[in-house]
Length: 282
Image 1 (tube, rainbow, N blue to C red):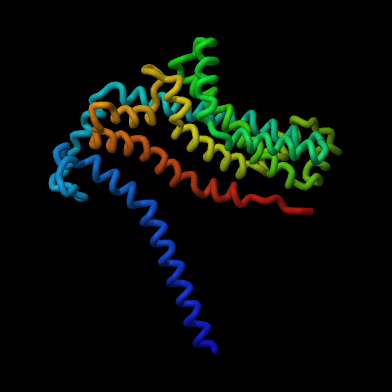
Image 2: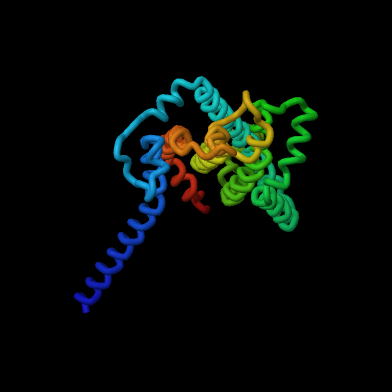
């Protein structure tokens, strides 16, 4: 009996390892092929049959990007959009969620608000491109990073508000009662009592917002022309009516991906902690 149980456990362990290996291969194979393409010679993209591994390694595409002053501008604009979007979103979304959670609204009304947050987050964004472009034109914000940031905030703030609203609703009321007895104002309760407790969830929301804003393309491509172009637009610019510049596009894609990979490696523990966060019920 014990031998059969041990055998079944080993089979399950092997199945888990196999599934994990397949998942890792599915995630890492495209990234590896992207890096390989970034170090291929231009002529190897036209060979028939196509070659997977380069016959000769070249860093020509990276050298061209480094020598191009536009690359620094693309990177700076992407970083600016990500930092400002994350900062404004976390501040606004967290405060809004805390206020909604403490207003003691009717359950139906709160459910309606939550539905609206989710609807704004998941409705087709392409439907808003033309109206948003017209609004930014009237405000004279076309081709500025602030146009991209404003477009992002319309998506990220509802998402973070919904995410943090769930967290604040799960907090036991007893946590703030002692502060109320001591005469703490609502601001003091939020900053000194509640915020330190929910900081893992705030960190997770900030990480997700940073990823979303760094990868922004649709809104950016509609309002940014030259000066405010970001890395995602730079990657797409290598596809034109004259053909596709595979090598430079792959190199620019690597330049765009690497910072997020490094950021994810350092931030993964905060993301996991924030997602699995739960207050101790009294």
